[in-house]
Image 1 (cartoon, rainbow, N blue to C red):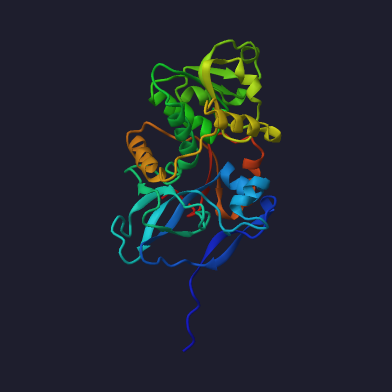
Image 2 (image 1 turned 180 degrees about the horizontal axis):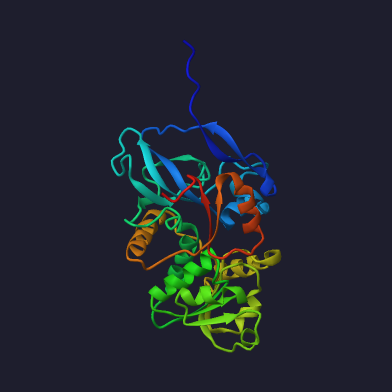
Length: 333
C-alpha cells in the first residue's frame, strides 16, 4: 500500500524581498511540534509595519532579516488561535486552549493555517468572551508599552502622541491614560472620533490651524509613525523633555540624534526597543487588561488569508488605523 501524502496547510510564503506580490499563498507541509513545542491552529493574525519592513527592508533591516533574502519564509508576529497538539514535556498549555501572543521573530510566523512555537514563547490564554480578532493586539502595544516604560510615564506627566490612530499610537494613548498621564492625540481629520474613543484628553487634527499654533509644552512627545522631524517637536518639549520615534525617520535623520543621545547618556531622543526577555511578562500584562476590558485595538480592515497581498498593500499605503487582521480560519469562531 502506498504511503499517504503528508498533511499540508496554506501559508503566506515569502522567498524574496519585494512588493506585496512577493507574498504568495501556497500549500506547504503542516508542521509537527517537537518536544517543548505547541502546534497552534491559527484563527487570526495581523499584517503590520513590522511585517512590511521585513518584506522590503532598508539596508539596516537586511542585517537582521537576511542580506539577500528573508531568513524565514512566513511572516506574522501576532497570533490568536487554538492549541491543536503539544510536544513531549509541555505542561503550560494543552490541546483546546484558546491562546494569543507573539511568535518568535527568528521562526516562521502566524500568517498560515498552523504555526509551531516553543512552550516558552510569549503566549497567554484568551480571556473568556473575547474573539480571536480582538486578541491579536500585541505588536503595536508591545512597542508602545516599552516606550512608556522608558519614559516612566506617570500621573504628573503630559504626553503628545503623534499618529495616535495607528497600532502603536492607539495603544500608546490607552496605556498612557492608564498610567494617569494627560494625553494629547494628534491624528488626521478622519480619525478624530477614533482618538476620542481611546480616551485622549485632547485631540488635534494635524491638518488644522490648532496644530500649527500649538504652544503647549510636554514632558514627552511620542512620534508613533516616524514621518516627521525631531526639530519640529523640540519647541513643544519642556526643559528636559524627551522625544521618542518608532522609526529612524525620513532619510534616516533620527540616527545622528539617537547616537548623540546615547553617547551623552541624556536619552533625550530614543526609540521604543523592548527589553530583552520582556515579552512573556508583557503578554501576561495585556491579558489582564483585555480581561478587564481596559484595552482594545481598533480593527481597520479584515482580509482572508488568500488576499494577504492586498493587506500588505494597504498597510504599506500608510493609511491604516489600528490593526489589519488576517482572518485565517474563515471566521472569528
